Image 1 (tube, rainbow, N blue to C red):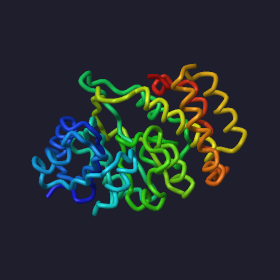
Image 2 (image 1 turned 45 degrees about the vertical axis):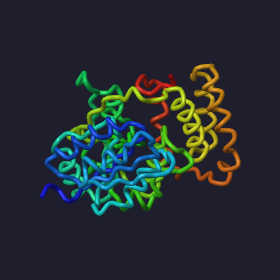
Image 3 (image 1 turned 180 degrees about the horizontal axis):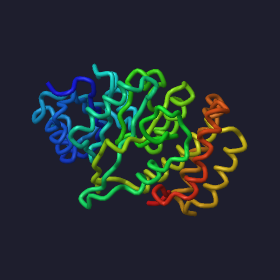
Length: 298
């Protein structure tokens, strides 16, 4: 019967072979999870191939690439209380989904768990794991692992009710650093997020990615999040830090211009996070400044 508590949402775009490999690994899991694959408008035959080879999995074929919003659509098709996210170049280790469900069952105010990430084929930890493990964010004593201020979507398990109540991923941000806004909104609503060493996600980075475009969008999204949710002082300091440290090239300029074009929306939607949340998450500023795992490169 597997574990009926956790489903998996996979998003993909133009990576048919990798999506098929991902789904095969999900099929082989002892948890036998409900799986929904959201195809973000691929033209390489992904949706048809998945329907043919994995008839037990649901396929949602979109007409356009909605980025992270594809996960929202997948979550709405779920019948399970918990949902694991999976990118087409990642996969969960056997037993991790059941362990996540056990922890979420035991911690009713915990909205999200972030797994340990192992980079394949080398089998080594992603550099971001050290930052998750040593998170400076203070948290309640009952948390089963370090409290987090953000997370990596493709290595996370969420409580479906909390995710939907927070609105899921923003359709404005598309894809690239979209997690930070959702994390802040969950924490502002009284939920907790944490890293759990017992969970493992494997990541074999696809070569089919446009690193330059992702950097442009990532910089835009960082600026948007900063001015949507940070008080003025920290927002100014974060913006100044980015201006000093991002590569001085055309991609960075375009990312900054994209952010400025959203000024009207930012002013209308700006809602600084509560002071208690800002005090907790403000400790991440120094970690982000020193980080070697997350850089605007490409």
